[in-house]
Every structure is written in structure tokens, then in C-alpha cells.
Length: 341
Image (tube, rainbow, N blue to C red; front, side, top):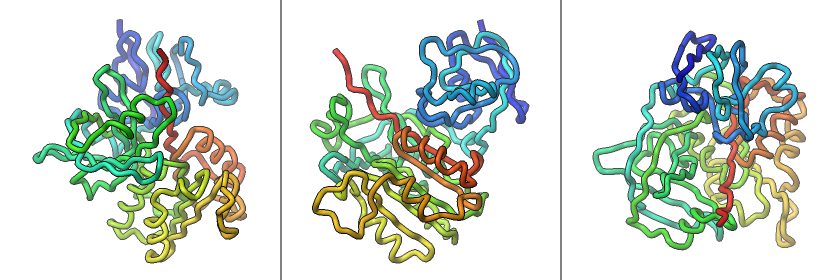
């Protein structure tokens, strides 16, 4: 059995297979819904249910709050269809033209940027390139059918390699494999590009970028794209980490701040060690930004990438100060769950 999903305001329509989620069906049919984590944690794929019936089974999305439910919002990555639907959601037109592909890649270079962060440069076949938007991600396809998602850290114009930043997660079998066993020249299969976290070039507004940990990866790609396009807009980069050693590419961010007019870089440490200088900002990154922008965020585009708790806290804190959903773009990193036996 299949059902029909009608999308407002675009007027698009597609079929959903039995047991398929709304998001999976939309992507399969070539319609680019906004989405991020794909497990119900970030809420990027929320839409308004105008008619019809869905269910989540036993997996109630954590991003769905009481106000969302009262306003008939659904999380499309978890919603399974029980009737024909009409949904109101803004499609991502810029990503709709990009083909999602499965491709083999060779590990061209592997290097440790920190004790627990590995940078991989993946080489595509000589005749191939992966088209993507700055900030999107790829899935690494594992032999057992599982997928691991990692943001692309380079800009589209610099596409000779796909750059990934991978943090080792305690108990994570794949990240442990990458850190301890993966070798240069090994082959990995990737699928992509995915995601609705990318630069909205048409907005022409000052930008605040907020990275948490390896959430710096997609923001790096976006900033490098902005620089390549010679876009002359104020940019503020805040990078929230536990300790100074977690700022694994601080030299690059400091170089941007030194040489690019209207670019500002502020690292923020949440758990600084005793060796840190007094000049370093400490605490939660969103609290530091609130102090720096007392006039609010109504004139800014805000891009945030990192753990869901950070991404959600930013919007909750900034919304009363002028930030709207239309000008908040996020990529929530849901870290790998340790494998159980």
C-alpha cells in the first residue's frame, strides 16, 4: 500500500511506501526537505500537518516539544504515514538540483589534528567529482549496512578531495577503527551529499557562526566558500570547546581574523584547564554571544553546528532576542552510539 503526500506551498506531490518515513520518501522522489540528524534529535525537518494521519511508533522524536504538538508540527524524518497527507514545509530549492550518489573513495591522507580528532582526505576516482553545497555532509557506508555521517569540511570549489573531521567517541566502534586501524590507501564508500545546512547566499546579511567541537568542520567549508566568492559581509565565528587543546585548527581561524576585514574569531572554553590564559573566554558559547550582542539578532543570519543540546540552547536563548526560524540554520551532530553486544 502507498499514500499520497501533498506539499504546500510548492504544490509538489509524491508517493510514500508502506513503512517509509515522509523524509525518506521526499528524498527518494527528488524533493529536498530541510533535514539534519535524521533521528528526530535536531528538529530541522519539522513541517506542519494540514491533514492526514502519521505515527512515530515507539520513537517519539526528542525535538518535538509540547508547543510543536499543539501547533500540529511533525518531524518528517520519523513520521510514518497512515493516510494521505497534506504538509506545509519549505523545500530547499538549492539542494534539489544535486544528485545524491554512492561513490568509492580512497583514503589519500590521514592525520591527527588533536589526540581525539582525525582529519581524512578522501580521493574520488580520477574522472569523478562530488557536487555539494558548502556545509553539507556525506554518509560513510559500512559493510554491515550501517551508515556514519560526517560533515564535509572543504568548500565546493576545492573538491579534489573530500575533507572530514572525525572525533573518536569512547565505545564507538567505527570512530575507534578510523583512529586506530584505518590506513592511507584504504577504500571507503560514501553516499551524498546530504543535509540542508549550507550558506544562504541570497540573504546578504551579517553572519554569526557557532561551532561546537567538530561542528567546526561544516562551518570551515562555508567560510572558505564565502572567501572564494569574495562576499563582503561581517562574519563572527564562535567556537565552543571544553579546553584549549580541543581547538584543533585554531591557527586557521586566527589567520582568517588577522587577514580578513570584518571577520572576528572568539573561542570559548567550557572546562578550561589551569594552564589557560586569563584572556580566553570561558563558559557556554551561547552565553558569550548573548553578552557580545546586547542589541539582539534580528539583523543576523545565525549558523550553528554541534551537539543537539548546544544547537537547541542557542535558538531557545536567541529567539527572545530577535532571532527567527527563517534566519537560523543548524546542523545537530548526534554522535555515534557505542555498539552493544
